[in-house]
Amino acid sequence: MASSTVWTCPTCKRVRRTIFCPQCGEERLRPNDLSARDVAAQMARGFSTIDGKLLRSFRSILTGPGTLTAAHVAGRRRAFIGPLAMFFIANALFVGVQSLTGTNILSTPLDSHLHHQDWSALAQAMVQDRLSATHQTLPTLSRAFDQAVIFNAKALMILMVLGFTPFLFLSFGTTERPAGAQAVFALHLYAFVLILLCVAVLIAAAELFAGGAGMRSPVVDVALSLISVMVCAGYIYAAIGAAYGATGGLRIAKALILTAIVAGLFVGYRFAIFVITLYSV
Image 1 (tube, rainbow, N blue to C red):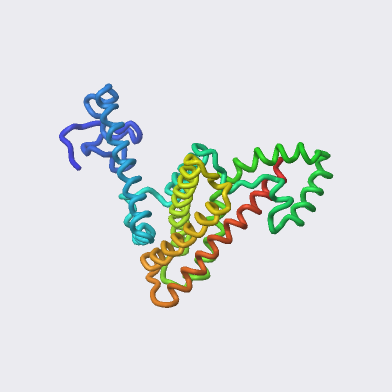
Image 2 (cartoon, helix red, strand yellow):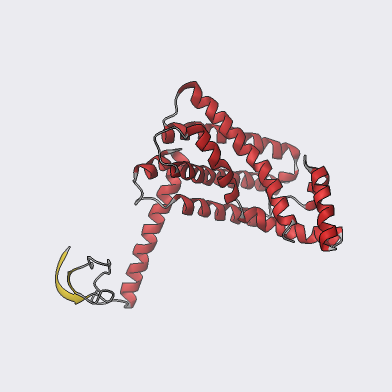
């Protein structure tokens, strides 16, 4: 874009006649640069751009399963935030909702690992080895573990994305799409899953506020888990159609298998967080 004003690019030190430097992209300073009014205008433009992209991205995730992945793979990216940023924003929202409601649905205390999980026998052996190596007592280890596991469970959600992506390669690796498309789909899917978990936590908190037991109630826990799995199955069915062009009976089969994998990874995640936390405290 041409300009009648001649200016010197502060980065390239060359005289330019365009608004933007063609070599480095620097913009010509405005007459009132960094004045209070100019700074306010820049901030307003910045926030409106971010908000617009964010709202557009979340609207696509919630109302058009798979369409955001399809748009990203096709190169239509300027109007949306990136898939990794999308995931981390959804993760931050999930962490915030858990903190607000005092609910930690993915962190399990050490006592539960030792006595109430499918891997309790293995956990007992691992904990005994850890106690021998660190010369701690079980109560001391338990206190440190129960504090650290809450943070780890919230901070390491990306592990589930990494665990899910290879299954997408197995399901859709032969399609004519770049390898990174699988990671993009996984990030978008887990952004939706995190939002779905936020809704489940808020419903449980509302039930608790109304006088119930919240997530401590087996009925509430099982009901919300089943509903979440069914919603996730429907979402994956729609998403693989839009993102991969899956159709017919094979689409149904793949949707059910991928849903089972998502559910299974939550169990695997609990065990992974147990191992990570155990050897970091």
